[in-house]
Length: 339
Image 1: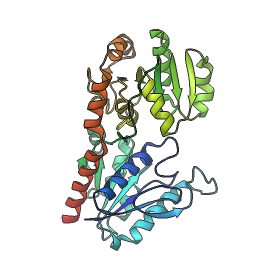
Image 2: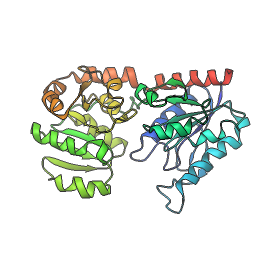
Image 3: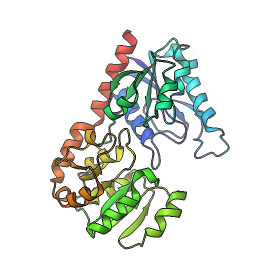
């Protein structure tokens, strides 16, 4: 049994009421560690729900309480609360939503501090982080690990999804799905183009942004291209489970792509552009298709739609169930404590 501090972001509750991949993964990890008998304290907002002990630095997150400003200080204070109690823990795991600010504590804390970053860092970011070359990182994919050159990456651990709740829908409907932030890099315009070229209906799900209002909304006709809103978990399961396929035509490579695993856990195959970690997550020809160009993706849609949804689901459970992720983290923690 280890005493583990998991420091989550304090932008919103853990798990999130709606979207939030970092918060979702942190919740699965924390509850999974508790289920294995470890003494876990989650540093998060008071609105969080967890089987671990909860240390609430703030009652609500700074996305919910706009008087909490600046957000960087909120994240720092939440992390500092864990480091101030370092003697109570065998290991501190910091889930960095924006930047690994825990690096500044790694030489000050008597307890090992390990960091997971959840974005694709730029070379200038990594150069700055390399001031602490001994600080341990956990990479979320091989693609992300390749970007962390010169840093101490102790292990690559793919994210997990809640395969007990993300389940297939008995009767898929006739639409393609796009689920992701409305930004240029997510490829929403490409998804609309793919839907029009294949003659299929497309449902878009995410919170509205300025990019949505300015660029995407004029293309939403309510018939072939439909805005479905920002979804909580229950609605997301239905949305993904009823889709014929998930479109993931990202323009900028991502370090993981949690929605891919979520869709596949619902038995829904994915059609993705080969960027970032896509080749690690998608079993081409089994759980979806990975394509080099939008033209290739359009041509490949029929083959993706023909995939066996039961096999898609089974493979997702095998690869992205929470048990695998939790066990891998326990192994990392044990090695850090031993060292």
